[in-house]
Amino acid sequence: MEKEKLSQAIKDCEEEEKELRFRKFGIREARRLGEILVRIAEERKAPVALDIELWGFQVFHSCMDQAAPYNNLWIERKHRMVRTKQISSLHAGYLLECQGQDLERDWLLDPKAYAVKGGGFPILLEDGSCIGSAACSGLPHEQDHRLIVEGLRRCKEMNIHDRSEGGAEE
Image 1: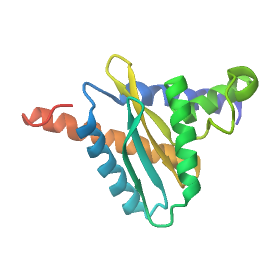
Image 2: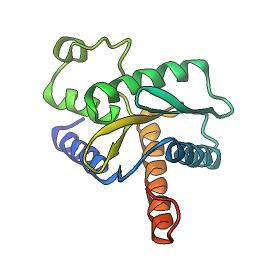
Image 3: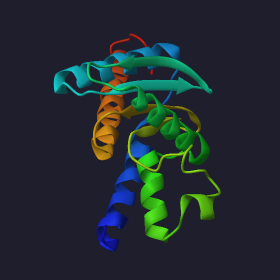
């Protein structure tokens, strides 16, 4: 990717990571996010596996028709990257490329265990704390990323709407 486009892509990732923060996010919110992600995947007939983890353990998992077993392997690699760097797996890939670095040589991470492709996204609280991640695998990696971002946006909007109506809090 050319330098200017790469710089813009990194800026876009940073903006998403600032925008998609929650005041509160627990098991109930994870389930809601999972249901939203499944709806989006069904609307698109996307052959994906979806996964959400909080505090290091899996709290949601679902596979759509046509998903394959290796999608779960990609999901785990994406979760590991988010856990380690606390940024999206796509953002991590762009940073490596921009800095001319190598995952194994410069970050000391095994490329068989860590993914620098889109589809893993941190679950962040308003103070920037990373408490988990949401991951998708089965589409081209940028589309995996966009599916997760769209799901997080919808979830955040629903939480804000609920709060303004006196319902569930974010």
